[in-house]
Image (cartoon, rainbow, N blue to C red):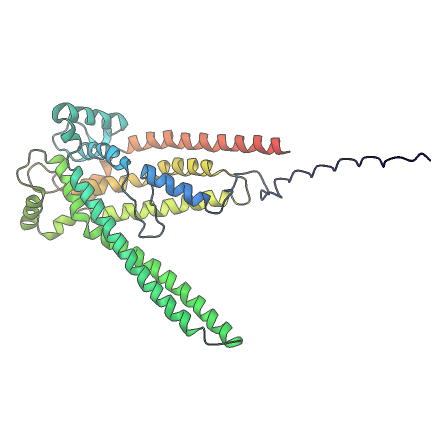
Length: 354
């Protein structure tokens, strides 16, 4: 045997790449966030930049001011003119995206930017008062909940053994009951705040069509209350609250569907945001008729320059159903295309991983 240095060891084999199932994806789907708070952070950033969603969670969620509010207000004002301006040659049934921009263009040519943003100061005042009341109410709820939590926690710290375990279970059950009860009270408070601030929204909507009216908005509100009663300031409130409730319910359903379809899958956060934005556009088409009814009822009054009250069935028949169908086909097709593109992207990623 020849003596010499031992042979060099063979290189260690590379560890096998984890399969999609080992990475958390049992089947093909969307990539989950790499960090636990990534989805919430990106959603909050998107909400703060675009104004499309609340920045705080819960029924008393507050949407902080965004430039999108100022940029999108002319579209809201143009829709109000199309739906409620009695001197307009456009009918409600012919309302569409094209007629909205035509209305904005004609208003700008005749009145300039002040006409395009007429009623905007009252609209911003309504949003500011509503959000301020929500912040105050949320802080009040948190103060009460923290006091209840300290009270329940102090009573259960003296026991030991089985007694301590029972007190701990009672404390957890109490916290759960307080959480459920607090959410119900928050939801009721949210709609109460919307009802309290509703006269400002009504005044801002009527100001859009009452161009050239004498008197300040406060004087006009006082005149409406004196001649038609206090309840006239809440005309269309039921439709407005119903529209808000439907939007929140449809958003919850949409979020549940996205989370359910992405369980155990590989889905990127950007793709989730894209699906949510596309789905929100489709959902808004189903809730917009109720919103239209609320807008029209806010502008119905016996005063000069406003719409005469009409029966609810006639109002429903006059809504732009054909334009809603066209929008559903367009936004539904965009959502279907986005879903298909994300599916192809996921398939290519899985094939590359294999």
